[in-house]
Amino acid sequence: MHSTKAQLCKLRNHYEIALEKQTKAIFTLGARMRVMFANFRSDFTKFYQLATLKKDTVADILGVVVEVRPVETIISRAISQ
Image (cartoon, rainbow, N blue to C red; front, side, top):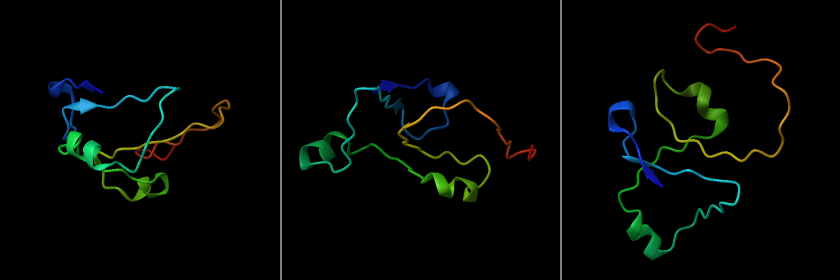
């Protein structure tokens, strides 16, 4: 966890969580962890719901890469190309 640069960040939190290859995510927090993260706010969004978000909405995404392949096509939402 590290601080963000407030002048460059639109997020509600003033810190970011960086997960690395060895990081283990625990989604059920115990009472002690809930106290430590009491001020942590998130807006987690499922991948299939991204298309339904309003323009310029900030969403928190947590994903796990299970396979890497060459990129074939990227479609821009703004210009549909």
